[in-house]
Amino acid sequence: MKVVDINSELFEWIDLTIHNDREAQRVIYNKYSPKLLSICRQYINDVHAAEDVLVTAFMKIFTHISKFENKGNFEAWIRRITVNECISFIRANKKVRFTDEDSQISASETSDSHMIIQDIQLMIDLLPFGCKMVFNLYAIEGYKHQEIAALLGISEGTSKSQLAYARKLLQQLLHQNNMAYHG
Image 1 (cartoon, helix red, strand yellow):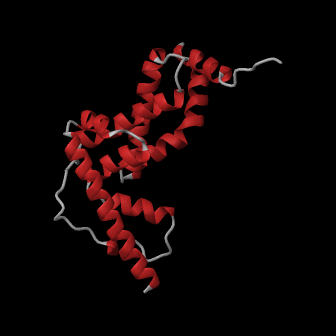
Image 2 (cartoon, helix red, strand yellow):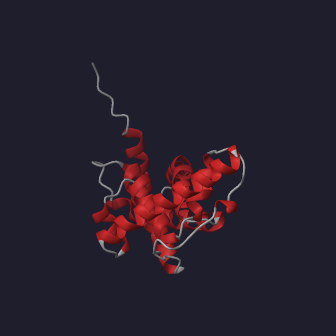
């Protein structure tokens, strides 16, 4: 039985991209841009800003692609670069604010429609930026609190409290949305 490496085609595209092959860059961009844009959108509310961050992330990916060793998972590698670019963008725009539990948000800012994925994203978008970043890094990206603390320059305790606060706010929004929908 012949063993075929299913990643060999990807590794060929990566090798061509290392040598600045525009077609290879286009193939990689077309394959991964939808996933990476959704990651950008999880962190950045403005779609146009998220697209700008995506372009910046791809510039970094293509510039540093020679540092990728074909031993690891390419998608995880580009995902990490994209998340870091999102965090850099948010920091540069000084939108990171960690909040206390006295802050309130309202579900009246969400639609009264039936609960769908867009509604959930809208609720996540309502979270204060600090809570939103910790929530996304922990719940969606799978980072540990120690990694989040190092990435954001906060303590592990702050990471844990922001996650707990984000969960609390999301539960409140879900409850308010359910009350509005079901009466």
